[in-house]
Length: 507
Ligand code: 0RQ
Image (cartoon, rainbow, N blue to C red; front, side, top):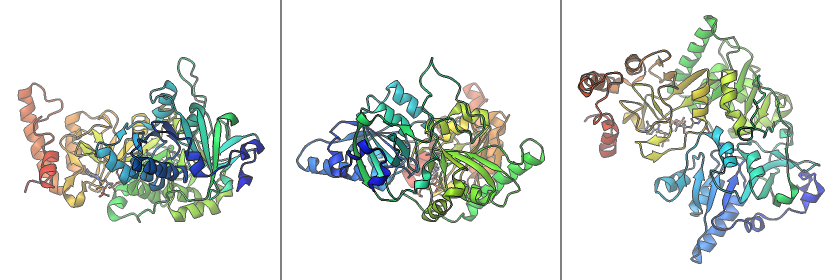
């Protein structure tokens, strides 16, 4: 209700989503909040999409450029893509309709490291932002904005855009107020200072963001849930991957190289990542901490079970059940979860200082440890790099986890050469599949290849990989160097075979 707008002057800005959508004109550049299905506007995107459809029916043009925190949901990315209302999109998405628009060539998409987004907004790489659309829990007496379940680039969006539209979502727990820590002083060089986070749970900012009331052109009241996708119960493959990661960490603790509380954990999205967190519930560690971008069910349950002391993230992305546990325990969780702008949650300086243990999923890795997180068969965008690069390059440990095959065995996740490079051999420390783990630290390419083929590849592909590697060694000798053996014309032939026959295996 209007009670959540505690600043009297701003109450006058309340209007319908349709009326607010009138501020959005063809060709505008919008900064819209949303991070992995949390904190995205629930009403404006549909109102904008309906406006687009009506204009298109009259033969008029209408589309927007759209920069979010990360992925949103069907009622944001989905409806806008479905209405052909998006001509540019950055930095991360996972919506099927939007993805199809990107892969059909109708939507220009820039896939970006999430830690870079706010800085590049300030640098003006995306041009001027006409409007920011921001989801919020409340507006304080002093006219400050209390963010929702996700912050992402929201603080920079509000500062940067000419006009601001706020959606106040009544479905959000009021107890979220106080969980956010808004530090928006990163600035641009040469005037930067160290970001003063030395412990994963340090508070360095304010619980809400000061607003310029003159920039706020509309406030829309909504009442709707976040995307709240269900998680699959960890399957056998996920459990085997998780067990190896946990065994390794346990080994490091026993060897005295890691404390019993480990180091702050980051985990990517998806079922395998969630399975690792679920596995930690029964692991012999205590007082764990999280320094991650997305906090999912697994980490929430670690906190509720008092296995994890505190967690820092930029968004809370829960299944419906976990959301209920979160809302019911919000008073207990208040001093255990902190939400930050994604420029801070994913900041290389802090990730390096804290020594974060990063765990992310991949599409494929090659025999030398290069990783592709984003493209299927080299050309088709899946989701995007997200924060995986921020954590992989700067983490204390960087794990890549994946089943060893995809599409019922027709695709090997271990290939001679990745069809797209997101994380180079210099950044990737461990590759883990249900077959086993390759520890690549301190190893040269030929040693890595042996480990990845023997430990991580699926038995159906192991002989093919051995054969490729052996012949590459001979061919590369002729080509003038065997540091990283390859047969250049054959290196991507597995992908080509899949494109032509639907199977990487030779029939
Ligand atoms: O597709 O459902 O159509 O069959 O990819 O694969 O195995 O369910 O795994 O959900 O963890 O996703 C890398 C895509 C993995 C994800 C990726 C197909 C597979 C399936 C999903 P179907 P799984 P996940 C935190 C960090 C980049 C961003 C990131 C991702 C679908 O983790 O987007 O890490 N990561 N962010 O069939 C063809 C292969 C394949 C393949 C899997 N080799 N070839 N298809 N698939 N491997 C979050 C943020 O930063 C916001």
